[in-house]
Image 1: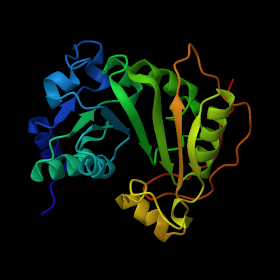
Image 2: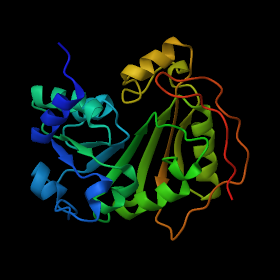
Image 3: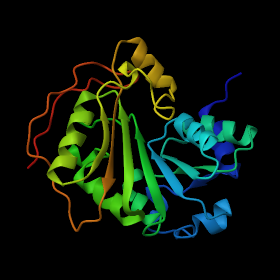
Image 4: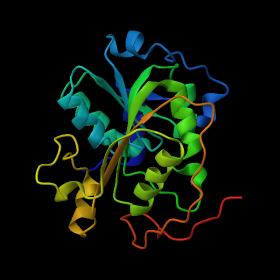
Length: 252
């Protein structure tokens, strides 16, 4: 019998591999792990990699299996979804994975400068109406810059042509070094082992004939990032459990 949300929330509150610090408590409760994730949580000095908007945590857990010499933290506000990955990691005794239930908007308050070595963005909502909510926008790059080591790599894997195109432009106008750029991951003769990891929703999108895109780039520390001044064609389709991706609110 499947567990309900309330039971999953109760489980998450007791799981040793889960930390909860949502926006609602950020101003009133201090966060002791800032700068101390390796010492106090992982008990090692291995690099820390974040997956932001991790959903069920499938990518986080898969990466942790492949790279035991790195520490992985899946970040999302939806605890009932993260329960799947957190439970799986506990059952398999995967010690280099954790889950952080929080709002990504405050990610720069939860890690110290240079504490994070890498970021993965896997299938984020493209937020076509509000650029301020896009996880590769100038505002989020500014936040990431506060916690990433200088020159650290950010990975984006997406089904959205809008998000993929937007991210290419954001790297271009800000002079960021693109490491890899693939407009159809599975059209390659040999798919990179990491990129071949498929989440539940990715499999559904592939079944619908959608292409999966990937771009990675290095984030250099800057005082400010700028937005690309260009119109981008909107995604027309509907994603599973998402409203229609249409309508672009012009920036003021």
